[in-house]
Length: 162
Image (cartoon, rainbow, N blue to C red; front, side):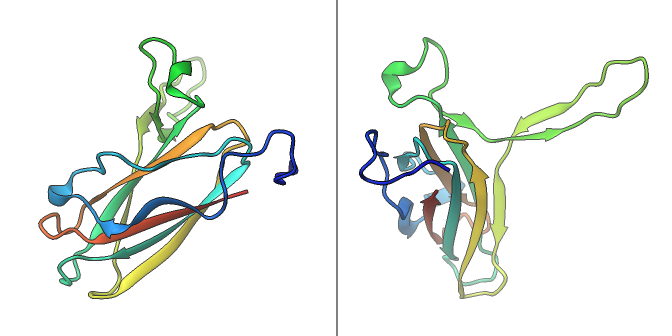
């Protein structure tokens, strides 16, 4: 693991912990966060996410979706024409292998859903580590209420980079 000291000749652009979403209500009507907070991750090998969620209506139906987005570009000016600045995590499912035939596998963009375990409680969990391998320049996590979209809950997302 590289030395990530503040005395490095090329200091990192982040300081732990990194708040990717300040604790606040999720958008109304199940919409994704319109402008998720982005952070530099250059030089980080891994990232662990900590989530804190409280349902909005206290009905026991609270849930939220979250989706990791990464950018390999340090600044938008580096993005090639017509290329995406941000790309979404993916899920891969290998197809069945048959001798003498090519195999078709599936890949799709992915998001995760967390559903509360107790009505009225603030719940928390950790996810990771997520391998960044020192090659990801920026990261952001978008979220939305998926349990009771009429009364969205509150959520915070904090990262630890290492």
